[in-house]
Amino acid sequence: MNLEIVSTDKAPAAIGPYSQAVKCGNVIYTSGAIPVDPVSGNVVAGGAAQQAEQAIKNLAEVLKGAGAGLENVVKTTVFIKDMNDFAVINEVYKKFFMDNYPARSCVEVARLPKDVLIEIECIAAL
Image: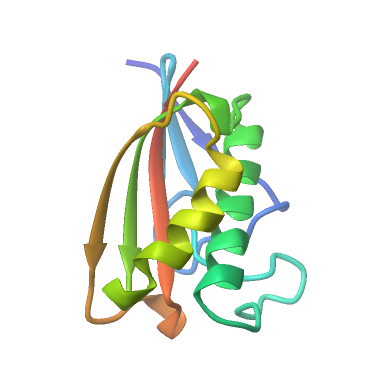
């Protein structure tokens, strides 16, 4: 099995002992992307829409670092702080995932790193 650690400075660095993503053959497994500005290291201002957009942009940069893009995503898992934000997050989500939507799970959680409102991880295939 050939594992390749994926790392890019275009997305926030890992805040713990994990990789931004791991590529195994033609499959990429990302860690959760949170809405942190990769330059400042701060959580982006705004609510669920702004945070969802930044989280997806960060996820896209990690995928790019692995030689893929959002069009390669086959499955996402979305963790949200408040299920009342589900519709708002869906509006942002469909700006990035337009056709042939990937499979998805969405789970409300009690708390996320840095107290963000959303975290997204994915599996992509080349």
